[in-house]
Amino acid sequence: MVGTRRPVTLALALVLLPWSLGVAASRHDELKRVIDRNTGHAHMTRGMNMYTLIALRECVTDDDIPVLTQLLGDRDHVTQMTAAGVLVDMGPRGRKALEIARMGPTDVRTRSVIEDALREADSPTRRPLADYPLTERERRGIRGCAGKGAARP
Image 1: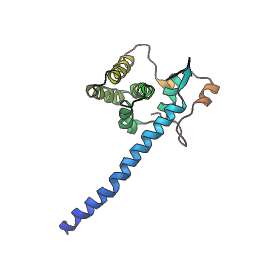
Image 2: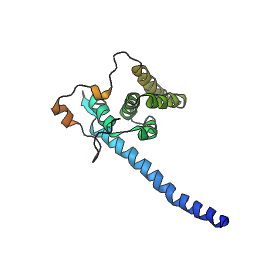
Image 3: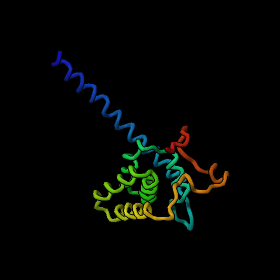
Image 4: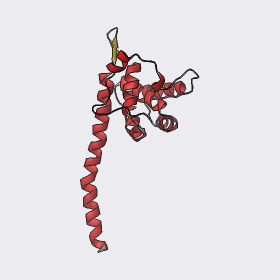
């Protein structure tokens, strides 16, 4: 009986691995879409603003920390800054993810984004994204995750 369990376990792992990778990739894509839908444009430049941060923060939980950490390495600077800003807002677990990520990248720009976010986390004037004052009209303009409500802790 023991000899037959190994092939079954291996077969199950081979079936589930692509599925789990697909789930992670789809969550990555979903969060990137939220960032892109809430990116501001001013002076012919695309950039992150508070709406971008709030929209992404409302879509994520602690379970998304690995995906947000992956977004730190994205080629798009706006995506990197947004992921870092949301990780800062996620408390000690998010900060720990940023500290670990800071040890890894050799890319100067990515390291700078992470260090700026960690500095912001220590700022005495920093307030949680949930406390950012928005009018009802501004709140309605935020385009978060499709079919999901706020996922704030």
